Image (cartoon, rainbow, N blue to C red; front, top):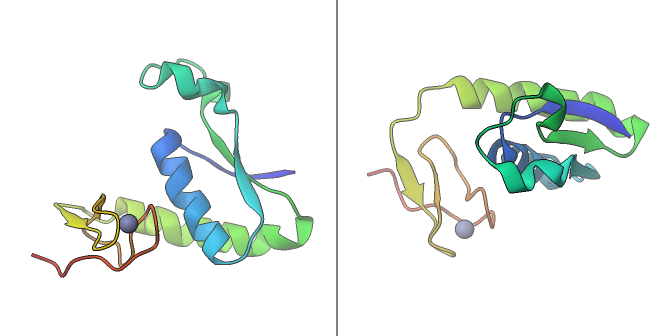
Length: 107
Ligand SMILES: [Zn+2]
């Protein structure tokens, strides 16, 4: 088990996890204990971590993390709705964070 990212919250961890799964990297979110105390997390250790299961995937996963961070830092003004499930994704996403479906055109 290899930690590739310590997320701010479960939402962010899930976004990254979806990206890794898209690349066929076997990964999961560790430390789901923090689920119940969403919001106030005093300890670094209680933040959700994204872990990769196979050593051979670590390098690819870290590359995906860097791309992910770059996207996270890009300014996001609005949201785009998913045509499939109706959930909101940040405006700079091409595909739905939740189901991977097509997003409505930028508004
Ligand atoms: Zn969707």
